[in-house]
Every structure is written in structure tokens, then in C-alpha cells.
Length: 234
Image 1: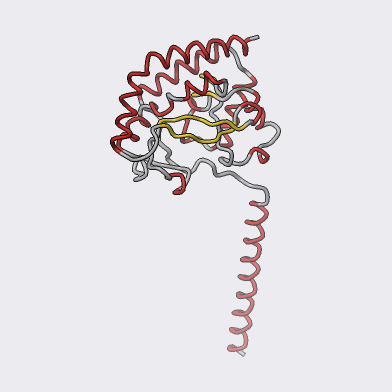
Image 2 (image 1 turned 90 degrees about the vertical axis):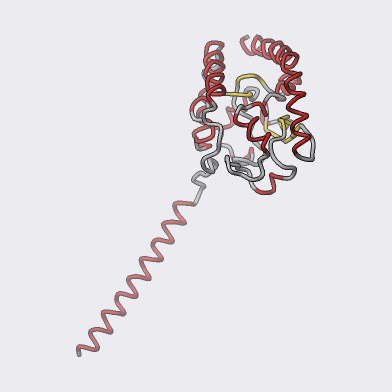
């Protein structure tokens, strides 16, 4: 029942939000066009409800084709434009996602929509991790108010699954309130490391095998030295 109420609330709030901020978005759009060539709106495929692919909208904050240089960007990344630094710091680049909410692709609160290939493809999510796709992705979520960009993806997804399992109006309001605080204080809005790193199957085995090989080589060398010293003494 709450999911229906949540969807209605999301639609109404997103519509009102777009109407109110449209003059401001127009000013930002002009600034983006003046500074660099390319479209104002950045479009990208993301994984949404039930793992279905949809197109997310964001204000372009980087040079056209910047994704070819890697997924992560920092506050010193040359690919980020001057306007881009400002709208990223204030999370203004996310505002066009109100259009995604109106289309039914997203919600105001929910797990952030992941890329189709990052942190890893849909088929590589575990059964437990796939629970994050049981609800519409959001503009902000439980993971975002618990560390946001400095949290490893395994932990982020754990936060997302917890949210899905405990979804309620009270929880959504808590996340919304804390999101506003983080946005106003500009907390956790810069990547500090590559958070997609995880332990993949076979990693420990490979490391163990490499360690064993090194140790075996060391033993062989040590025995050879011992034999050589013994021969010289003889």
C-alpha cells in the first residue's frame, strides 16, 4: 500500500519541484552551454526497477566524452568543467532526475541507480544484492546518508538491501531530511577512492598460490646457498 502512496507523492513533488526550479535550471543550462560545447543534459543507461535499463538525466558537469577517461572523477579532475564543479558540489546536477521520477523510472528516495556495467554487471549481483532492484531507484537513499561516495560498493549495496527490507514513510522522511542537510553542507560529494573494488572469486586462491610459489623459490635458493657454502668449507 505504501508503495502506491509513495509513487503518488513522488510524482506530485517532482512536478512541483520542476515548476519551481525551472527558471534556475535555465540559468544553469545557459552557463553550461557558454563554458563548453555539447548538450546541457547528460544521458546515461542505468539499472532500475527489477534490473530494467532506463536512461537517467543529469546536468552535464564534464567535457563531452569524459567517460572514456574512467568512471571516477575527483575535485581536481580536469574533465570536470568550472560550472560542473559548482553544480556537483551542490548536487544541482541531479535535479533533472525529477523528469525520471515523472516518467516512473525513479523515486525521490531509493537505492541510487547503478551503471549497467559498474560496479559490476547485473548478472554478477548475488541473490541478496539483487533485492536492491525490488524498488525504484532514488535521487537519494540510505547509502547516500551513510557515507555516500567514500563507501565501498559491497557496503553500499548492503545499505540498499537494508532499505528495501525496512521501507516505510518514516524511513523515507528521515533519509530526505538528512539528504537536505548533506546537500546544504556539501558533505561526501567527492570521490576519494575507487569504491568499486571488491574481492572476486579466486582472489585469495591466486594470492595464496603466488605466495606459495615465492616461498618454494626461496627454499630452493636457500638450500642451494647452504650446499655451496658446505662445498667451500669442505
